[in-house]
Amino acid sequence: MARTQYRTKQQDLILAYLRTIPSKHFTAEDLKEHFESKQIKLGAATIYRQLDKLVSEGKLQKYLIDEHSATCFEYIEEQCNPLEQHFHLKCEVCGALIHLACDELNDIKTHLEKEHGFILNPFKTVFYGTCPKCAQNKKAE
Amino acid sequence: MARTQYRTKQQDLILAYLRTIPSKHFTAEDLKEHFESKQIKLGAATIYRQLDKLVSEGKLQKYLIDEHSATCFEYIEEQCNPLEQHFHLKCEVCGALIHLACDELNDIKTHLEKEHGFILNPFKTVFYGTCPKCAQNKKAE
DNA sequence: TTGCGTGCAAAGGTTTTGCATGGCA
DNA sequence: TGCCATGCAAAACCTTTGCACGCAA
Image (cartoon, rainbow over the protein chains, first blue to last red):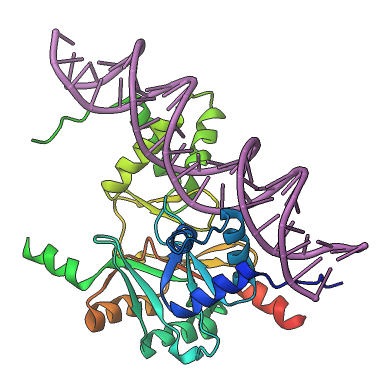
């Protein structure tokens, strides 16, 4: 039996804000600070519970960037086109997080699926490595 | 000025054990338990400090699998052949961690490097998605 | 009125840090 | 002997949980 869900002020506030930052990554703490700066008080528990709810509804993707830092989230726009999915590249040197939309990378997805039966979740997957800028600096050394 | 490093019993114990489990992933807690089962007592701080040291020396790869679970490590064999590098596939449904050695996936690395100037670290990168078994189960539903 | 969502505080688990002690060179 | 590494305990950090209260339906 499905449990009735209430719609609350806090829910609306969070979702409204998320819609203004599509494809940006943020942490639970970021959200808390955002609302604090607007004199709106949201309990940490509420934030975590709402974020979990949005994740299970597929409106939010949850992923890890670094060890020992908070979990990151990213709002997935409702009208999101699967073809416009992007991958995350994380530079291990400077910490930059790069959003990469590239058709050829979709080939990876297809390959994993056809050859290995593995269905890739591009939202959650993070590629670690060295970004162009830092690679350049290394070479220059 | 480089600071002198001492070689300790604990260091040797850890490294010796790691050499017996190449390409297996483990947590700091796993290590602690392994030594406890042999009546060897290692402080948690020592383990974390040694692991960090090995990571910075490139002998160990550190990566995250799940939020809210401990950081995983994997020993990289000294004679490791770059061509034998494998990728990690993590099933979001059943939690299985799959090691995948696949030449075609090396193409990803090449592609990211040539087209985007991004040097991929295959040890750290984890592909999230649904494994063949779970994909099958979903279909059967 | 019913019962879900919130907020607070406490608890949980992992990792880091301070400090006195032990042990390598 | 000098000083790095260890071990213990305490702290830090992020996140979850218990419980009473508030609020949506």
